[in-house]
Image (tube, rainbow, N blue to C red; front, side, top):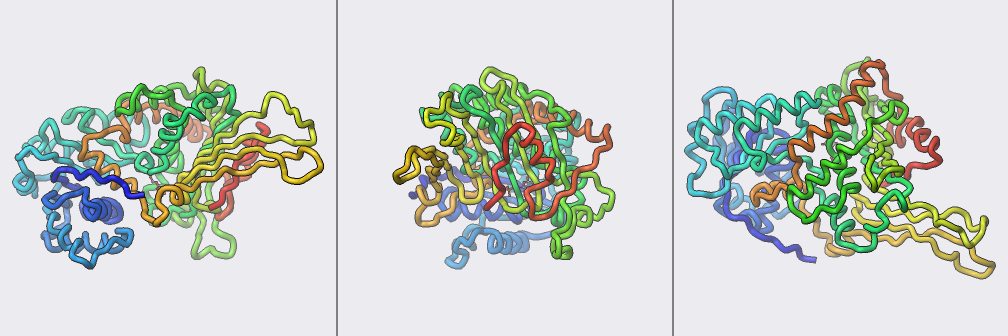
Length: 489
Ligand code: BG6
């Protein structure tokens, strides 16, 4: 299926942190792919800004290398890459000083085109950047700033960041990225729920027994040990990505698909979350992969902190206290160095009210599973009769749909999350970005959990690399007579 590409008018985009890892892996390759597809038009001005000294030619070479490595195999040899690089330039810029700012201001147009400033830097620089964009006359009422997670490390720091940005920009100009919201299948959650009559009438605790959200990764903390050890899975994944998935699966239908209508409903979900009981949460930390200690060291070796009490795994049971969900728990689980890279949301429906087939037929439940990655798609487990004579024996079979097979049989990859989100910034659509109050509400729910661990001086449970996490996570489910879905690719 050929996707409909709507080009965006040429824009100015300044990437602060333009030589950083995110620019190299995601932002520049993403912009190139949008250029190849005709969405970013020639004439766009993309300006890298960072402390290191480079000229335009060197920056273009940096971008070309990044695109060859991370561009997803897009044709770089037919002149398209060279044409794209023409749109790039670089200004050595000191976020805390004066160097580069006059030059940046002179390169930015005043011809009414959209201007966006990507703060791909640590949050400690947000205030300096915001203030200088104003004092050097680059920030007009229509410009946008893009900020990355982590948006704070607790409620107090998130509030401070929000206040810092609010001193210079309106909320409608601030685009807080959670890249999970840019994933094709995550948006499909809304399409599945609100574009079909089939599911919504059953989407409540009267029909749903429970919901599971799993984001399992095979990677460890790799080269990010220093950041990760101060953060842990709760701050790195649960407070943002899993929380966003929870909101999309649990929220009420918004009156329309518009940024504030959607975000108002998400916010109500976060505010309706009960505090998590300490015995409803399990933290884990991975051990080395047995026999592969050099290639896959333990978490503590990876972060070079032999006494680290940071978690690389979290499983928890959450309750949403509202009419729709009272009585149907949400089980959330995420971890690194698990058996497979597999993210899915599973809605487990209740038993039928009366089993007309008798006790021998066993227990059969409908299970709707939405796979986010890899192999995006939806499977609905349906109960049917086992074929053959000999009475009514029941069996569960999957109604299985792979989005790739159904929508892109020619193997065309959908745009990466960052491509979509950057284009949304230029188009001025905030639906897939977190609002300040949403981020604060998510921290308000997360903070007491982390404070509880710290007060109890709790250490995470060890789990084997390549497993599905600590056994306590299984017990969390077993105590409720339930079971996690297997972590498999
Ligand atoms: C990031 C986290 O936000 O998301 C990483 O900081 C994590 O720790 C990553 O690995 C997962 O993203 P994805 O798109 O690979 O599922």
